[in-house]
Picture (spheres, rainbow over the protein chains, first blue to last red):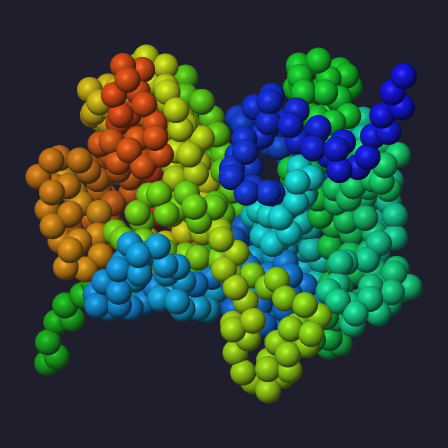
Length: 312
Length: 312
């Protein structure tokens, strides 16, 4: 008689990943955390995003879309390299001559690495869709602040076999920049609306106090402060049963005056602007829906289908 | 009496760029060729993409979407670094210890560059949306081949003040991989359908034989061969009047057996697979529409509005 098999987190994650690949919803793109997505997968993303845009409509947010690449000068102002060096993506390019290129090709033909012929392009991969926004707001905001609707690709260098953790993923984020009190109110109001939407979609979602994964020993203190000041709430959904505390599929954050200070943004009352955001990971929520309701959207519960704008 | 002002290409491009920024359709993102886009801009992109998807529907293409980042091992197989080193984007990250991070921070605090603390992440930015596809096709294809519908961000390191030339832009591409004869037929058929769509949208579009901007002296021969073998057709629209030969907003290409050879892909008849594609630049066509019909889509010609699925 063999001992009962106790599932462990690693194998359950692998199993979910393999099921997604076998179904064709995700396509192995050759590196941990890099996938192609099927048309069906992105149809779910689009419907989900339609539902989100619907609940956020009262904000009358200014829609802006930025590319996944932005200037290093702006990256520097966020101090991201201090807090999250391990997640950073920096871009190198080739600016050499014909002769430099010839030596690059010779080195490559000899099986050598050709990275030494590249140099920093002074651009970075965008780690959160709001980062390219702040430099645009330098100066004074109107009284009451401004609200933005931002979406696009983010990059985080954290290769993982967990299909919930991608190196390149899409985030949809609503950002308030303005007065301090309004900022926290914004976060507290709209994180609940997003929570309700996720629950209407049949997800067992809840909000939990959280902290960002600040790097290293110094980072532990930053994390503690963030928790103590109630600056970060995560929207968590159970993906792997009791094996972990659930996976964050969205969050609501008070940025304090971090971006206001760094980018020289003043609120309408003349104080340094505060910021807050509510955001969700477009692939993460989609994966949570697939995990919860199965891989056949046609047979998802009729109220979920209706909430996604599909024929019930 | 002053001499009449003769407009030159550089100043006319700058003027177009400044008009786009003043209108808010594009948002200066801090580097040549990097922009934010307004909600209105992306509404046009979405409608345009809907019209394109409509005409391409008979292909019943397999939809796949890849992230803008892919493995260096696959980039290597395309020989892109030989042909277009100057357009390449390579990603570096930080994988050091707490102590390494401390020295990075010290260097940064002293105003030094911290690039030396990063190392290659073995990933690259995607230069064309079909590049992450081919490794997935390694092996044998069915007789008749396969057709794919791919879309997403591409990166090309070519900073320019011309708003038609972006460092990060979106491409929608239909790709055939299979038998040689079918590949050329695919290109010749669908480039014309795309041309007709652009003309229906009121663009003064035409196809011209073209070549890719292969790098350096050796590249000139590659370019000549590509032209001589009629491998590349560009869809060109006049953007700057008579000041240049128009701007490419799309293309149809015969890849020959380049990707088939490199990635070990066999056609259904056992020969090395050939490939072809028809693609358009989502921002480029949108900018061509704005240049042609003006910055107020509400007052665009009613047949153009109708073709985009808008109330006429």
